[in-house]
Length: 434
Image 1 (tube, rainbow, N blue to C red):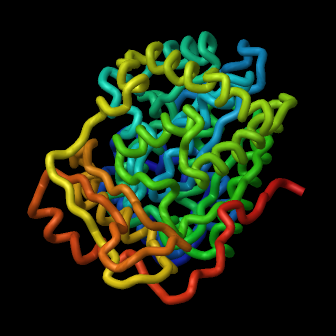
Image 2: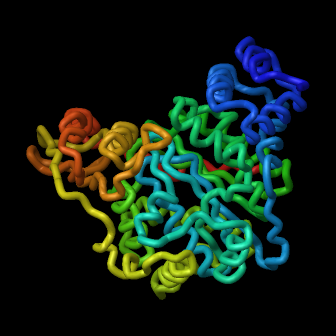
């Protein structure tokens, strides 16, 4: 054996640089089960604490990418473009975005993930629709993309298997917000899709893994450089995540709100971000029309029909899209009210996301089962005027003990002041290769 996990963990702990050969061995050994989870957890923590050099990151991403199959979609003539978000609270953008841009001619081989930490996962939201299958083997993945111009799928057993294992491990070991682990995880999966273009939605703010703008810029630039270095034109948008996106947090809640967007009545911030990312995807695909074409696709019903079409193709019961009221709900509801009158100057995304997770909307351990009906509906967000006793949020839950443990925390997510706050931009910055 050329290396041992212990010596590599020790090297990273002591700030020594790992060679490409050592990294390649480690990723292969972890994928094959030679290196167990507990040793990779130690390595993940060492990386979280000490970071990676540019050379280490390039080697780590390449080893992850080539730990399994890389898709070849070159037989599909149209441009293949995907989108990835670094994760946020209430971030359901992928669900309306993919069918919207697919309906105007962009091919979207969307590979998505499950909930990670306090942020929700696209796959978990889609699977609130009975029968919706996101586990597709490579042949079925290609078939759905080729036939319908898009797909919603999780990682296959053979596509970047190292990341599939490490993704779940990071969630359970408090090593999610690490720039090298985030960027290599995202980009290894996306590069394995055989893309022509990629747009990245890099969040910044309390509910994001990168809390400050400088960290978000660094992450965005890092991923753009990785993408361009592998021949994929990559553009990043930095977007705000101090408060949740939209009015709904929780899996079924967010699925309902996503359908509302495609019906032309979604909340302003979700619609704005969906259209902004859609415009970039069209740009990367070389398709004219921009925002006007996207708005027309919503108004005409084409975008919603595309969601129904791909849901049917992936085994989902389309009646749950036609009537979102059929989606899961909870038996109990609580209301959080404003203690005083004034303007909402804080609606903290992190607090709301953590509470939703602890109520059952997310996973605190790898083996946890999600309660898809759990959700928080926001009745007041930044800048809203409220009166004393007015609802700030409605909480749907099934486990009374969990709610009792979280009620005080959720109430503390809002700050109400006499004067309104300065408005915050949702779209902050665009980053691309110079």
